[in-house]
Length: 133
Image (cartoon, rainbow, N blue to C red; front, side, top):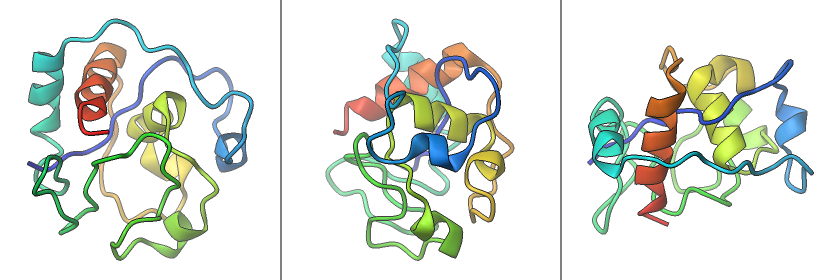
C-alpha cells in the first residue's frame, strides 16, 4: 500500500518550518475522532507513491511506517535537499499542515501533491497512518 500525507486540525496564522522544529512547544494537537475505514479510503490517493504495513518500503515516495515522532527526511529514501534540511518532526499538527500544502511547509519538497482542504479527511487519514506506528 502507498500513502500520501494529509493535514489534521486547524492552522492559525502562517505555517513555517521553524514552527515545526523538534522540541516545538506546539508540536502535537489532539485529533478529532476519526473513521479508520474512511482513512483507508483516503490513503488510496497516497498509495501510488507511499507504502505502509509489514512489507512497506521506500519506492517512488518514502514508506510511512513509524511516521509519528520521526524527523522529516530521515529514512532510507532519496529526499529533496529541502526535506533533508528540514527541522520538522512529524506529529498531528505538522502532518496536517504538510498535507494541506506541502510546498508551503517544506519549500522545495519533491512531493507533488496539491493538498487536502477537508479536515475530516485529514483526521481520518492520520488515524489510519497511526496504525502503522
